[in-house]
Length: 625
Image (cartoon, rainbow, N blue to C red; front, side):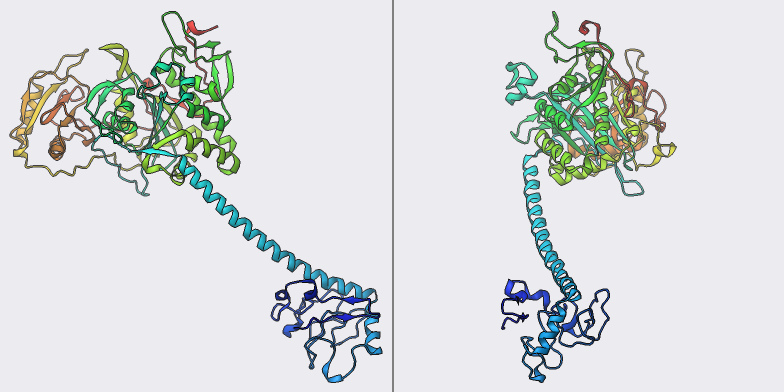
């Protein structure tokens, strides 16, 4: 196609056509507007300039133009109506030279003030279209680049995450039933490892002599988020609490660790975090969905990413070695509030001696977590891309998680479920405990208070009373294990019944095992018989040694009204074994437990509400300065 142009008087006044400048023809094609952007080429009236009188072809008779002028004077291309030449050099039917005096006169007239303004407006119309085209292309490129970078960063974060088996031991527990809205509670076990496998952990955690030792679970907290996501309850178990640890298998090495009775921090070295989770399930009867572990250097990284939190001590504190008491976290603070982060935050979380005991350390950890939650909420982390990116980087590098939440998306989805819980609906507690009668350096669960805490978790009852009475009844039924093994006929099931109603405070109820065995006989379990072996325990349980007897054990429990959460696998028994505990000293049917109410957590659980901002830790006198 020839390039058309318009000449004014004098050969040196050449006005170039847009194509001569390399502009895109598609901006001026038919259907999108005429050469001046007015829509004239399509034969429709286009937008008119203010002051122009509209004409059928979309051009106005502005100053310097004659009304009804069909040649489109002053435009780069002339009108094609009436047989205009393809190159727009003039009306074909007139035979008139385009440079006749009349034409020149018209064009000269068009160079007046009004003509220049009209031409300027037409050029202004071209500009925005071209700019918008380039902006659109630029935005598309930017979005593609951002998406590509985002995908690569997402893969990078996924690559940071380490994961392992959710459970390494069989407890028979199943997820709780959903409530009417289809929701179930979420239970997450947080584990602080004392691993010194990395050089930075040795530096932060002390003794190089233990660098190669298997890790211990020094910090253990169960985070329970209600089914309706309106409240959260946290329970810590001190590391030196003696519990029954089930048989666990290390899936990395294939080594099987037999069931034992030992302090709970040993669980991490007996097959990993999955064994710790199984131990908690066995102790509490609460189905646990996920676990997360973090080591010393991870705590420091996370504390730095958060930017630190406020903690408070009632007295000057220096947790240092003393004669006969080695070790110490090194924490040194004056009385009052302090903003701690990095290594100092780790010192706060590890301080034990200066806070008098493991129970004191758990309370200090709860204060830290409450303060951290308030800090994160105040920072609006989930709406601040830079803050969220920094936390995501630190978290994925610092945490090891159970495999079912081993992606960035799943961790993000989990965090979004947690973030909506108000601070005054978060309650931190410690499992009620007593000094271990077999070893004064250890602890054991304090009954019935500890069992009340577990019951509230199983039934999804809020630890706080800030949500109204309806909170206690919003969840589904407690978790009930479902056996894959069908039960045999009652007459074919052998049951050993033992009397465990005695304790240090009270003697056992005479003939209790015989009475319950006789009750079972009457229900068709004719092989049930009493065993004289003393078995004092607070809570009634039914144990079975292998999976092929699980259905039989559950059938026995149902016949007596014993909760299925009290049915547990144990290698300490040779057959289905019922131990009648101190919670069932009379009656022939297991007593129904009273329903717990919201806010009814026992005082011995040392509850701290998340909205409490003035909590301060007392300091054990020898560690004051």
